Length: 232
Image (cartoon, rainbow, N blue to C red; front, side, top):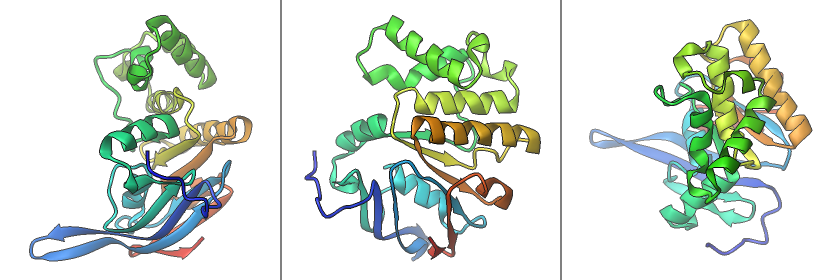
């Protein structure tokens, strides 16, 4: 594991990161330059228009997308100083991710979908099932554990995605447009659930959205535009 940096004072510190992509003969910056910090227990919204760099930023924070420059510290560890295997282990322990399109496995039941992230934990099947049921109870879906994803509403599928993201009890939850495919009433229910997880479980939540109505649920908003932070 990489050395701990004792100068890091926050749970998450982004230092001078940038991310470029090759487009034909030129390099196009998705993130030009960003610096900010997030403390343990915060609920932070990353807000910006499509193409502003917010989803790229979330993937960099999740250890899924190596930045072209700069440093990402999580709990004093330099995330991209780790090997890809170490980073995968770190991610499974520290970070839960809710993807924009749910990404549920259609032929697995709700319970089986939630169990998936526990594949590398070494727990017995019964223990995994119990932990998955506990978390489904938390998101209000214990009664639908044996259903398939397409037998659920969009809001219920989002709740399964949340349950799957938190089943390993990671301290950090990353959410990419978690209400993007939901009607306003269902979106409010999902946001109330995330707020409760933040308040009662102490989960640090970083959520990407383009919707100002959703950002009001968080403690703080980091606005991004053209690959830079406008305010944080």
